[in-house]
Image 1 (spheres, rainbow, N blue to C red):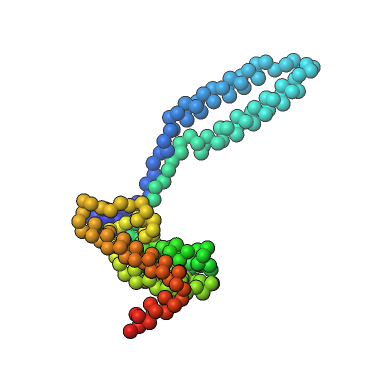
Image 2 (spheres, helix red, strand yellow):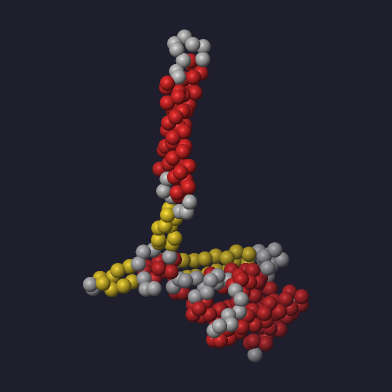
Length: 235
């Protein structure tokens, strides 16, 4: 659905959110109505049965009546927020399409320190999901800060930059969600009704499997594997 439509030579924008009434309002109205009737009956009882002057229980009766009046006032005030609750559902894609030209440039920092505590695969999944944001690429800057200076993390990021050449077009073409490779393949089954999409889905899945094996090999063999890898690519 287009966000901007032409009408009488003017730009007409679709709304950025939709407002709907919350479910369960009628049962709450019945409950609130019974509460209101009960409060009224209590107040009528208190007024019509006030002890006579000089009665020992009159101060306690008046104190209870004032407390009940305060509760009744508080309850009536809270109904302004509870009587007709609503839910707002936003359309994030419309925000991008409406304000694409005026969106500011943003910097995103991903920080890591220990590849044992924060596995490289988890970090590069985070980086790839950020790179796939529905945001103008020229206005999105992503930085990875590795305080541990891990060779394994460097190698994983190098592979992620190559994989992004396949992953980002795949995300934008098919508009997939979520855009983290690990999260996407963990919850989405292979499409069988679309041969073209099934072929792309399989190729991406195979690439990720190879990346997992290479990271595992690097973790076992140490930096010698990384040096061999970099030397191979530089030839």
